[in-house]
Image (tube, rainbow over all chains, first blue to last red):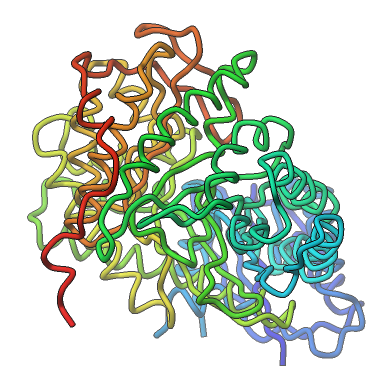
Length: 90
Length: 454
């Protein structure tokens, strides 16, 4: 199972979640966990997703998500979960 | 499962504090390329490099994209050329053809530097070693990406003073041949005491003869991350300070370990070591000197600098060692002058001198690094500086090095501009008194007494 972390950071606006989730659903990427906060008007969201069922290569997904972010004026990053796990878990 | 706070912390390190993987260095053995036919040797070397390293750059890009961590350099380290070319090269010009082959292969696989134009002469020089050393000025000048290193001393063998004397002149020749370019070729040449076989950092990377056929070594970097962490504990006692540095070093090194394992898997080449070095760049906030200032010094070079650096270096190692299964290379804080904005400021303010840098090299990795000195410095004086640095390494059983830039035609008050990751450097004054008679003695300095441990 390949887990990844998607983060969205930017000015809060209508439809951020809708755009991201639609993209994920269309690509058969399952969302396992979501947490979000809004700090001083800035939207901070993190999703843990499972990419096992998608056919697209990881790098394509990462760049397409970044593209969606640009369109709605937020920064979207998609990274493999291991980098966070390695750094914060023994 | 990771939480939002942790994800934000990691991404903040990457985006705001310049956390990156400084280099993935692929070590390649050229021992199986050896033949006595020069053309055949060059062909073998080219083929070995381009076959083994063909996917290296792409692998680096892929890891970058998947983990969202920048990998600044992809590099190659080779078996010291003096060993590989010993049988085929009958002249210095023959050795230069190897440098050109290395350069061509580096360009074709897309790596930015290739190391291993090297000789290991800590006790004595073979004919091939000497030919290679004498070819260094031409080899570096006629190539773009080749790096050269010479191991002049070790704790077990003492200091080869004949080679030290020769290198003083060679460094001046390298400076002169690249005078149009602020003597920039000197950046690609370093001399060592106790050179490690698995150093991923240039200019000193080579693939030691004790290594496997091919190996992945990774160097991480994160002075900015450590500085931010230290800033949060301003005024706290040493226990808190040390714990903070240690924890930060652990986190940074974990990233290196992950990248090394991933690269090893992708390329199907064994993982060698992670080098736990704090390697600065001229980027604002990516400075080791700034960490020293944050610890409590007005400038790097102020009284207390050596103690602060000793503590920093030790905590980085303590934190990093547990984070990686194999630690090696140089591991510690680098203190190059031109590549570190805080060091440049310290030199310009008059806080940092060559002598203070020498003291600092006793307690951290590497040595006198990227230091511009007047172009009219005598060869024997350069040899004297090198000999001092070698003695520190030899007696303290550590790696030390010297990468000096006697900038042609420049004097104290001028500066040299290298651009990019190499930065710029103000010319530092050198002690004007002579060591001619000392350097002109032939032979070698014997190994120190503590080498007789077995």
